[in-house]
Length: 155
Image (cartoon, rainbow, N blue to C red):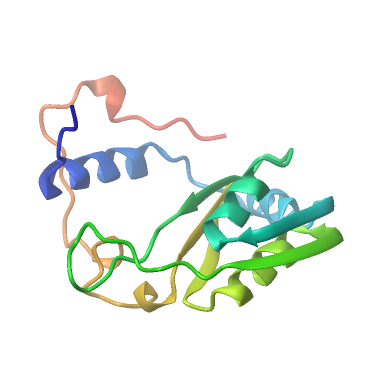
């Protein structure tokens, strides 16, 4: 049975996860930036989609994790927009080059990196202040959380 998650619960989960992410030092940022320059010997897709390409890329040995946000249609909040299909064969490309190539086949999407996570998301959400994940919170306060849940360990 599926349990719907409401906006307050979703926001609570997002804030809890965000609070648990350790801050990155310049050295860590340099190290994670280099992960995008790792080479993939062979990357092939036949009649695939951007989501399928990102899933295939996430199966490659790497310390990166990948997140994908689908585009919803304007008609209903549960309906996905049609996906663009394409085929490609690439050899000895970096993860960065593969992400750029994949997004070029479906130019509704872009990608960003946050530490060791690569986020593939709709371009239309970039800098949109009404988009949930771009909203600035004037104050974030947690109450009733166990003390061990409020501490983050830093490298």
